[in-house]
Image 1: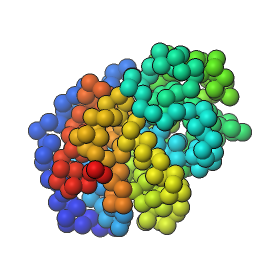
Image 2: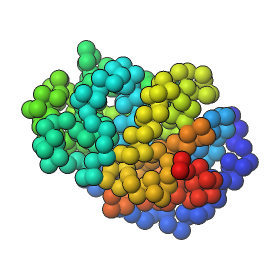
Image 3: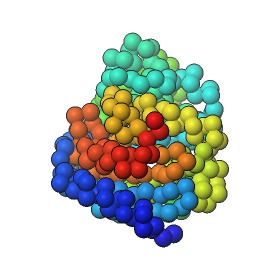
Image 4: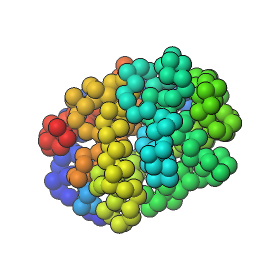
Length: 310
Ligand code: GLU
């Protein structure tokens, strides 16, 4: 696969657009292992539906994908369970913090959407049916290794440990959901899988490659694998657009105009339907918890290309 000149020129231009801002924002510090990451890093990688790739900056540096993992577990669950998932989970933007407990109480243990922490815990619980935590973690890694054709993708054990040691809120959310009988498995087992899926480390190149099926109606155009039905891919994109950036999803739609999912590690996976899959990473976050420079880069990208879905 060779980098196309135009695409290489595009990522170079976007990189130049944001170069003066790299280092802005605050790294997530509620997970101690993430607080140590150098904020002066930025990477971008694009892969098109024709299989062309281009990358710039620190696109080969692995980072903690955190909540971006929720896109992949949602894909796995929808393929297994289909529409029945929505009996246990909503698909509306939350309008409140990603780790809010108040909303969960008001809505009787049915999380607002699969991308807030509570919703991802339910998704993980569904994935666990009939499987041990170890098997499920392996299945999630297997999914990503297959999508990228890269067996080296792994989780960062230090990040997983750090989350387990400090994940009091996630533990509370899981106990709350279980109290409402919306978790079938023991809280510790669900958290074990959840913390490991969030601790998966990937580079921008790998992440863009992994998400390519979402840009091409569920069919990976490079290896020809049918990863999800066209309908499932369309629906995941819809949830990414409306719920993928915490309670700033509206602002991301306004500024960037693409389905996207961000994580507190500073990564964002964005999908330009029928065109390309894009991954950006820069660890400094804005007030809403989304990568500050990453969002800016995507804003510049859609301004330059007209790839907004609107
Ligand atoms: N593992 C993080 C948490 O549960 C994920 C947060 C995120 O990236 O949104 O707090």
